[in-house]
Length: 634
Image 1 (tube, helix red, strand yellow):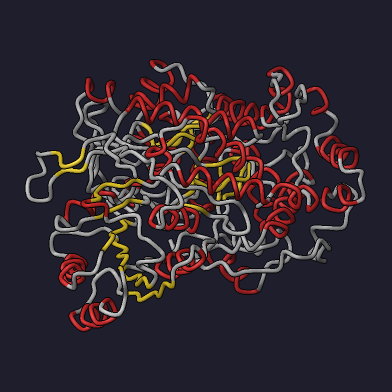
Image 2 (tube, helix red, strand yellow):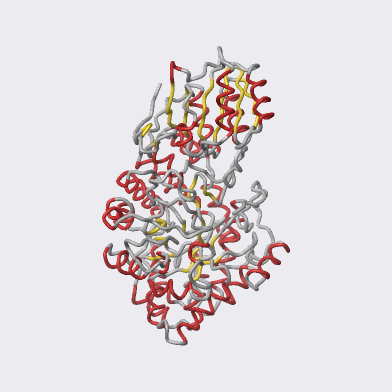
């Protein structure tokens, strides 16, 4: 999906008059005046008819012990329509819960039949909202905090109102919905190259603290897939790697970091999406692993996540015949979700679907059947259906017709309310500008992200000491290569970020973007520029056997200038440029990873990353060119 969010001011702490910032229960005003806790707690208690005071045992990190008796009392007072709504997490357009821009009002009317998030909550009583940059939910941290407060207030103001789960996909690396000035960390495969459970936990702790400061209390991360297929188009660098034990350790560490910071973590995509060449957004992947291989490979990180106390697990829209031969996607499979996840693995937390708008779950059944079948399979939360109205009414009708029992809904709602209680949402759901200012994107957090990134850059090839480049002997650097669209909220484009970082390190670096498929004329231009440089850095992106990126690299090598290739995404690029004398992998092209790679190229930092996946030969994939654990140093 495209990221079309725009920047907004973050310099002022003043509250804008959006209809979300002026009432007695407003945490933004209350906390800036130094009295946040009492007004916000009173607002929650009043909105939930006094029941929530005894629901949780408050703790400083928002962890709490749910009181099932009190939660069941809440459920017993809910109408059937409220119960149905509580199962849904959906998108909504706009930067404000009550006063979005006209274009977002129009989009909401077209897709959801309401004008605003507040109207959405009033009409459908949904249990959660998911933030996207393309839905204009994430302009800047103060705005995000105000939006979160507006959403909480809209829900708590309803009869029998409940706090909301506010979620996003903040995986870091290639998938990040909230960008600068929030702290952005290396993605999962880079963390896998760093091999540090401490770094993974720190990432979760800092990212979780920043999300919670902005009112986001559920993160659809970490990715627990074991990526064993180099051609995987949807997971790839979003995975920690190909070694199930290493992936499991990092998943568990990140879960503890996030949940210790008061944010529900989500392991995905069960039962394992790491060995597919089909993107489930657009097709219906089939995993051909045997049951025994699933136990040895895919299941290991999910077992670790469960042992770490994971709050939620997301399903995969994949067919897995060894686990269920019905042909249904795992999201709709009772043998997989109830038989294996619940009964065999002993998981009793929240099970959430991947987006119900994805093609992988829509190929076999209509949009009215999918949510009902998901609930019958054992799902608790229904994420982002293409039509909320169709899905909501389908679930309501299924209960009215007896296909689903109200007791079945109560089971899922109890799990959802337990999650909300554990994360302290009945006690304090609010965000505030003051907390944003002291938490989001602080110098200490940014410095930590830089240090973690330095431990992830992997040096794959370095013949005859080509790297590091010497700023005295090789002062003039040319940076050429691909400029893929930057992940949400980073500076970009990559060649420009690399050139600026290298210039800051004492070189004179010039950026010349050549794209992912450079033409002959573009390659000629790059070769001419290289002859005027002392050394060249080539940024590659998903190189294939037929890619003209290979021609670019070969032509630059022919100039006789020292050439270093930096694989921006997949480390597998190195197999397609066999003539290079120096090659590194950064595993993503966010600023923090590019700056770390620049410091390695300049010799300011010693490369320490180790491959978390094997790299096979391009001409013979059965042979491993570089094994897991390969990584050179200076």
